[in-house]
Length: 429
Image (tube, helix red, strand yellow):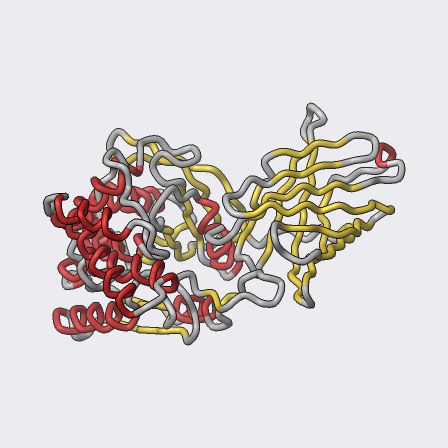
């Protein structure tokens, strides 16, 4: 889940809970400030009698998000979902096949929730299983979603965004593809989940190699049509996508979806991203000018190896400004990461791409310059391969993750054309 993950404690004050089973699927909603979001809760119990639970929410674009712990007594069940931003507490009463109650979240108005037990037994339209594969000595672990049936199907490998991203981040889109007849391979980034290695020490070439190894792994699947294996990369993954396409052995990539991929030098993208984060806190024109000077110097040190002297003087001068943030500690992985990505020239790789390409961006992206990136990548592809099937889509009002401004309940809304655009483009190819 790319946005806020709630830390949830669900206290169900059950009447005779010990005599009724909570195991199963519960369909329901969360509601707050006149805004309602559909949520599906799955509760299970293992052979040792321990409860576990996950939830799906299309609006949050998540599937199978696990609660970190589940506890139950005769009258109370507690589900905790660890996150990094907020804590919400849900308390409700279980009556037969319904759970109803209210919840509170840090600093937000009180909300209500309700669930009803689902009696349906519809099976998903795809099968999912665990797989492993290797890029040299590094073993990577993931999940393969394959549409039910007997024929050979196209497939997509999902590349990672920046940071510690697990397979869960792509599960929603992967399940959308698998439901529509396209196999999907999602995997944990190096050092995340069940994958070995360390993404903090990885070069762009290492990460592109991991994705190329995933493509090679798909080629060994009997249900996968090896002539129709493509890649989908978002943000960092979209930036690395052309490298993966070019370097995959045997021309293994048949199409590329680059989502919010950078088409400018990486230091320019970093300046754009940082300034969009801190400009809202600048109070005057001089504040804004100082924020830019500080950001440009920080990035020059990180990406170009400039001496620290001027940056240190700006730290002294600007501490206490409302927009100010301290540089990362000397041992922070940011510095090594920045020097590695300073070498990356995405357009050099795009110049070598010879397969169909979809470039998709949010017009309100605050992390990657959307229109400039799209224009530069498209011009590079068309100049070097005029006959390549190239599609560019920039979705109005959408941010870096293709979300619109939150509704009154504070939950994000996905740009309505985002998923249909992906499915339509894939269906045409």
